[in-house]
Image (tube, rainbow, N blue to C red):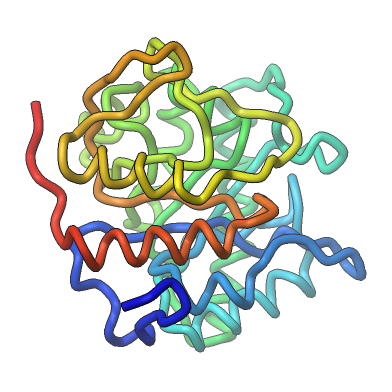
Length: 260
């Protein structure tokens, strides 16, 4: 299979690893991302719910397209910060986090029911994702909503994401990133503005993680990584090229191996 030939949705999934992507981050007449092309490649979509991006019309259109594509659909709740695209941390109480995530997930569920789809998971966006990776209080609030809907949570293995989800009995999907750099402590370096990801670098990173269970940090260290899904950010200028490259890697290396 070449980079230009992608299996239809019903033929994907030969690998035990999925490709996930954030979608629906346009705002009214202001288009954003590469949703249509990405839906032909990815397995899992996280749909923005209106706080960091998206609005009712975009949510409806995105959900309908995702249902038609046959991908898993989850809520992608962010902090209430459209100007900062949800990538600036905020001081929120646990109750505020819970209410915010519940509000956003509930809105998405309404659109899913209207389109004949179902909520499969929740993945926090941007700064909220980072806050939940460090703060048990924040992650507990997000788990409250996941348990309410009986869905899984996406996050980073070995962080508070996983610790709290497992303790709460919430299904957890650990992720790998190939378009975001890892710090030497295993955390992610989240930039405020998207940047082009070298496709060959993303391909090598995915293969290294699949075959060896390792990621290379910005400092040149190699850290163990556990994952069952690989994230592609839709606002990356060449997100479609990166997703296509990942699909060919997964077809070539069909299963992720167990690593310490």
